[in-house]
Image (cartoon, rainbow, N blue to C red; front, side, top):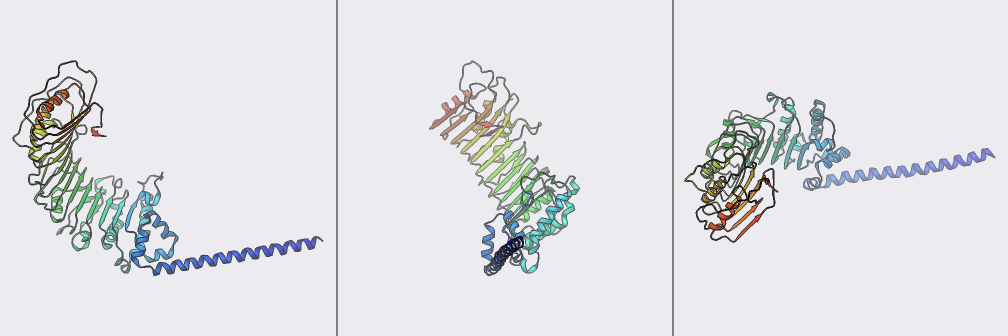
Length: 466
């Protein structure tokens, strides 16, 4: 009896296993059919169609797809935006130290794994890239790989190339030297934008410029002043130049930069900026007192000047600089944003015969960090208004110490008539240190004034409007 029962159970188990095996075989066959169909479908799609599909994915998703699909990987279709960062391969929640050599080696390996299917000449002729960016802590010791990546970027006709190696070089001699010869002449004719950070630029002999470069951004880049001048002159189509924290003492270009429209200089501690840029329309300067010579820039529309008084202890007398130097440096500007700190007791202001002949809109942000009564500084603001005879709009944002309010009679300061000033907006208004006198001066001398807002609310944070 027991033998019969065991026989029945064994038969049932074998039947169940047979059914499960049949189901599994069908599933395996189905998967093989799907993979085969996908492979056929991928090969049937035109290259442009495949690139369109890939462009709808993030690079991280595309990398995962390459890992999972051998067929896709063999096609060598390149993502249009190759942006290799720490997050691309390790995720944003990484806890390990990325400045170690093993992590750098792993990053290099993963970048090479993504690019390897496109290394061959036959594939490279059909591979095009919009953006090629590497942002990771590498240095000169990894130059073999970085050089090869730049070769790939130029061969794949990348329009934008970015290289940010922040944290990779501890010493100056370890900085990676960008091989500009790879971008010069026909090699980099497709490159329109170049963004470099924490690298070194040295022009090779016979450097012919980056043919179609329109935008150049340098952050903490080591470059000789003469090399920078030659680089700018040889890039005939350059429209935008941004220098941030670059260790240089001057920016002087004697030849015309006829296409330059945007110039930004921040934290470079330059002694002089001298450019011939007749088509310049926007200028941003975030530094200390510097001799600025942009006399030919008659098309200048917007200028932003932020004085870093708190960063540079030796930078003082910003109001006097604005009154005596800035009108000569930026005579044609239409809109001017000024940010300064008033820390010491004001002295007598100098005067100049130069004026802002086209200034229509002035945005003045003042951080006042002294508490004693001193109404003399307001004359500096009155003088600024006198230097802008065509001014139509004034924004004055004030941050000041509000302790120790004074009980006194307020009288208007004297001054000339303003025949174009229509709109005035003052925030952070308080009744001491000359602010009330300034308001009365404007009311008494702006003969076509249409609107005046006096707001006691503090709208500035660390000297910047919020």
